[in-house]
Length: 214
Image 1 (spheres, helix red, strand yellow):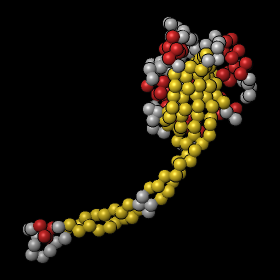
Image 2 (image 1 turned 90 degrees about the vertical axis):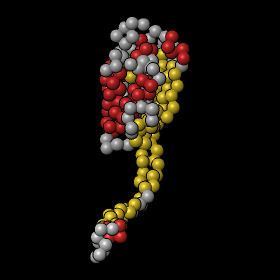
Image 3 (image 1 turned 135 degrees about the vertical axis):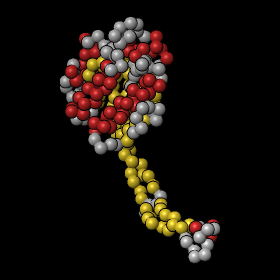
Image 4 (image 1 turned 30 degrees about the vertical axis):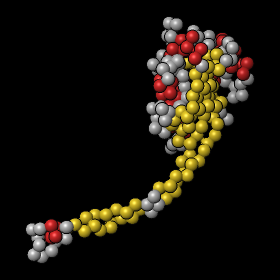
C-alpha cells in the first residue's frame, strides 16, 4: 500500500467524503455515515469522482471542486466528466472509465433535495441605565441609584433555514461493492459555489474524523 495515494483506502480511509456537525464547516454537517470495516483491508489506488446533477455545469463544478480537495490530501482523484462527458452516462460507462484510468474506486454524490425549517427569533428590549441625582444625597447610594430607560425594542420574527441534502457513496469499481456512505445537509448560502464548498468541507471533515483522511 504505497503509491502516491497510498491506496485510496489509507487516504480516503484516510479520506472519503461527505459532510459533521462533525465537520469543519459550520454551515454543513454529516448526519449519518458508514464505512465497511473490510475496506481497510483493500489495496485500492485512486478514485473516480462522480456527481449526479440535472445541470451539466453543476456536475462539472462539483466534481472539479471535490477532486481538487482530495488531491490536496494526496489522493489520486479524477473528475468523471473528463473521461465520460455525457450528462447521462450509464453505470457501465463509468465503471469502464474507472478501470481504463486504473482507478479502483468510484465516489458518487447525488443531490437529494432541499428542506425548509422555520426558526423563531424572540424579540428583545434594550435598556440604558442613567444615574438619578437627588439634591442633598449626592454622596450616598440614594443619590446615584440608576434608573433603567428603554431605548430600543426588537420585534420577534420568523425566518426560514433552507438546507440541501446529498448522499455520497464509495464503490469498488471491480465488484461494485459499496464500502462507504455519508448523508450530508448544507445550509443554503449566498451562492451555489459556497454550498458546494461547505458540503465538501464537511465530507472531508467526516473522512478525517473517521481516520480515513490525513
